[in-house]
Amino acid sequence: MIIDVHGHAGPWFFSTEVGSVELNLALMDRYGIDRQIVSASEAVTYDMVSGNSWLAEVLETQPRLLGYVVVNPNDLAAAARELEKYRATGRFVGVKVHTTYPGQPLMSAAVRDALGLAAEAGLPVLVHTWDETVLGLVDVLERYPDLRVIAGHMGGPAWRTAVEAARRSDRLYLEPCCSITDRGRFRYALDRVPLAQMLFGTDSTLVDPAVAMGVVLEADLTDDEYDHVMGRNAAGLFGLEAETDPTA
Amino acid sequence: MPVERQEIDLDVDVLFGVVPSRRLDASLEAVAELHKRHRIRRGLVCSLRSALFDACTGNDEMRKARERAGFVPVGAVDVRDALTAEAEIERLVASGVRLLRLFPPEQWVEADSPGLAHLVDVAVGHGMVLLTSGDLSSFWRPFAGRGARVCFLDVHAYRVADFVVLARREPGFVASTRMLCGPDSIERIAGEVGAHHLAYGSRAPLHDVLPSALRLRTAGLDDREWRQVAGGTAAAWLADPA
Image (cartoon, rainbow over all chains, first blue to last red; front, side, top):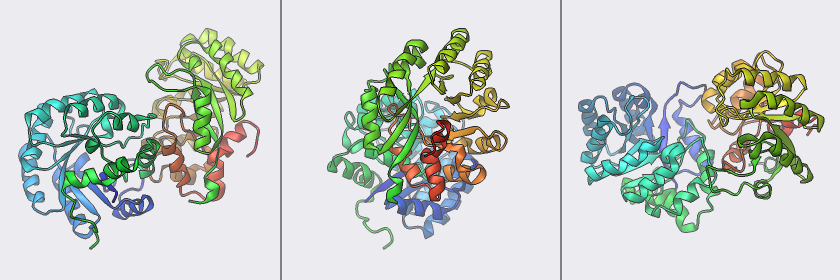
């Protein structure tokens, strides 16, 4: 089973027609992706509350999709309410924290506290990481012993630093989606980070899954590596092990 | 995926040499092997020595690529030294090199650099085709209004609209597909301004090749458009119709 841990749902403001959930499913079919964990683009870029609400309605009718509750670090009280509201549905299996749109650096107190909320809720967090501050996640993980964090984009251009961070904490996971496809980036990580911490993510529908698929396949994974990266690790992290047929 | 979409004819974004920021085999032999593995027939190849250290000796090194099947030599100049670069363009033209690659971000050159604008004029005056890195949203300006034939190698999916509005009035503007990674980025440009404004580029060996190759191979283009992007656009620069 292939699980994509970094998906988006809804339109974006770039010149691209990616607003339809049907596109999520069509791209999943094209690349053999069984489950995709998505956040609402509206919640990421604009309004956490209305975006999460929209996604909750989508998830009611789309069994192959699961959700991230988007948490805006600028309003932690509202974020706590969102977590309480949507965790109970069973359709939201993680938390998404972006840094660009809320205008909060990864190492800000606000982001740290937002991650703390996720730890309290017992949910893994997908965090947008794009520079050397990804290393600071190690300190945050030490502060919250129950926290599990996915470094989205594997640090972007700072992927070597992301690898160093993942070597320092067994609760820091890496997923590779990125439009910068530096050669050998994923193999570099596989050779240094415990296999259990490596995940597959695409950034679909903002980015075509061909890019992340290409990055992973270029790494010449062994069967065991492929099995863990493409599904097994995510199933364990998000508690999806018992689910084999999402359409059942 | 149709069998005829397995082979890509021309890769417009190929480098070789030494990569000081990485431990990476970027030799010409390694690049050739990458292309072979990914079924890419030919590449427009430029020396990293030219880009990062010394344009003249780098271009001499690059010319040796001619001896190897599958590579078309691309010259380079150092925009930080526009005076030497003028003479180097003359030398390149005299030796039959028809493509010139510019590296403004790698050489810490701003989009409004006088030297950059001047060198674009010199190269265009010699009928050269230009390949350039840099964010399209700022680096379009020195190439506009000059009748330049230029391939922007770093056009991101987020800049599709900017590229389309530029291409409507600049017939020589082409976008490399490497970072046109959205599910409809390539298709949208082809539909808006035509596939002749697109060319496949991988940035081998600095970047993984399969992501860009797989995106092109799965692109929703008709066969004629696909062949145009996979080689036709660049072949036209070489007066060598695919």
